[in-house]
Length: 418
Ligand code: EPU
Image 1 (spheres, rainbow, N blue to C red):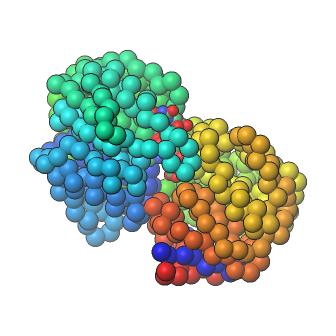
Image 2: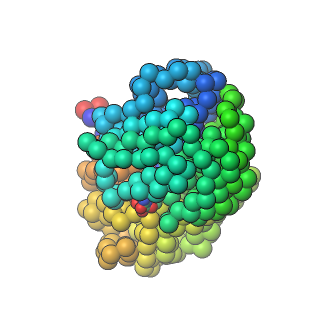
């Protein structure tokens, strides 16, 4: 199993390019199930979750082909199966995204029910309720969710709580439902808007993009299209935090600063020198970093997927910061590992209290979640001596060679085989 070795203390300098967004490409791949025509996606990141989704789709009978230049073509001409088996779903919860499109176009879907995961219980009841509202019969037995329908019907449905993939599943299903669907309390994450844009490119009729209410008028069928996946705002945010920790002028380019407002606002508050253009952020380490708390929230609030990385930054800030996690109940696994590196952090319920500044010292560390792993890599950049991050496969699920990108900026970082 790969590990990453980082020797801390090297300044970062130069320009780094952001890859396509993992959380945008996963629903986009699932959307290929809605049509028998070809979908071409560009700027598809080479990350393990994409491989897993391509395997799930291949299992269902979708022809998938990687093209030069990070392109993927998909064609769901006729399906050989309607089931996503446990051995694929257990490695990636986002496999649940096939449920809506499959039942909408093929009248049947069977998906192994995802279990809890390292960051929390993560139920899928909202996905099920939304599909039921559209007229699907959904049952659960032998660990599988099975949805059936002889034609979905438009309906009004309001999510009890904001759910990103729940919104995406319902949105995809509603595109082929008869009549009008109004989805309330929808997630407003840029990845949801991007999915809506892809679906519109396929012939769907959707209004209210970027708002909490999506109105969908169902159509008979959808057609093929070509679509460019947006830049990954979480990867961009991770690299910006790296710049704030150790940068002597780092340019994170090919991103959308407009999608990163909550992070940029907090960094400025803490005294991090930043310049944002339409598609890049220039950042460097401040001479004095101030403390600042954050509370995670659905977009446009502070992203839970950047909470661990921001916490590492706060270990270097002067003063105390409270970091409140409101999205997932167990997303502080990085705290124990950061403490082993010398950080002073106390967890009280949903709050982590960080006292800074602390001199971190390199250590062997491990994490069981993607963003926690990224935070440990960031900590390694400023820790004295050597940090070895184990179980790098978590990082590779969602970051396209983060180690290579940081090395190009000047970090002393290398990947070690098992
Ligand atoms: N929830 C329910 N019932 C449901 C669905 C969600 O109670 O049926 C709860 C969850 O347990 C959680 C909250 O609602 O407490 C929000 O969860 P959400 O459904 O929005 O999360 P998700 O769609 O499963 C996506 C991202 C996550 C990201 C969250 C929150 C994808 C593929 N995954 O997950 O990304 O953290 O939204 O923004 O889009 C990551 O990339 O590392 C990652 C975990």
